[in-house]
Image 1 (spheres, helix red, strand yellow):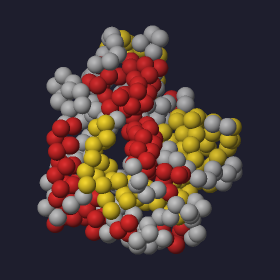
Image 2 (cartoon, one colour; image 1 turned 30 degrees about the vertical axis):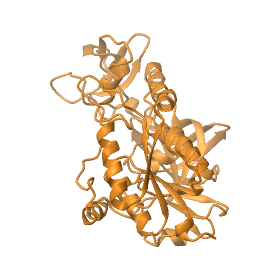
Image 3 (tube, one colour; image 1 turned 180 degrees about the vertical axis):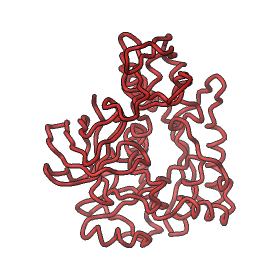
Image 4 (cartoon, helix red, strand yellow; image 1 turned 90 degrees about the vertical axis):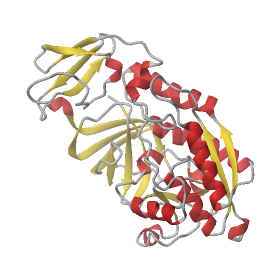
Length: 375
């Protein structure tokens, strides 16, 4: 068993406060830490300059401040090929893909993991709000989440577990992590709340202590999905049709709209409208102003591209499922599993299940994995 000072950890430094504190805590715990900035995007978009240089400098300043080695891994080509192309193809086909999920799967916990391990890292670490608990008696450790424990790659099962701060929990975005990568991953802030992370950053005089969170596409910056897509896809106006079959307005292109969307329809007067579905071939968006409209609600989910981290769920057993980040989990039961397909019966109806988005399955605090919602 290695001493902590002999354990090499490559921590992803994004230039934000969460990863900065993650690196700080690893240093305090005595690990041999290397900070890595992943350069995944550097292109400016009209009206939206890419913040990568500022983020890189902030990450480097943090590395200097906490006294760790620092490197930059250039994954820009791979990010476009594996994440951006996936996102563009999805929107073109009429679904709403999640680039953050794919970024974690293909870049952070695959490419970054592989390169770090090839450079001698025992573990990688990120600033995600999540935890790793190894088998033995995982639930006993879950009850005492503040007890810091280094996972052992020799453990039979590594479980991805919800963060203590439920409002910040990011397991929804992490459900496609391979078990081997999870066994070699540390989430140093998973037992902390966001205010506590800020206080630690302030106490250590980190340049990122008061830095705002990025709300845009993963690694691209503050640009919204519509503005980003406009740079790569052609679109034209089309009709917006309500539940009565009447044309009530025009949209900018069906590709820009998602199921359940309320804002951005530019249909004035009366009750708000919600997108129920769209037809990409005719470039038509269908809406309703009846919140109880059956087309908005479902008690069954069909998933594809299934991924289980370590243990697959069993048919007939009760679990919980989340269909959006920060959405409440809903009780559910697995009805059928057919290879990479899954049918789930929900305990309560949910609104606006969106093809292309992820549905993530939980067994209490443990994230089992999940899949992509299909129509």
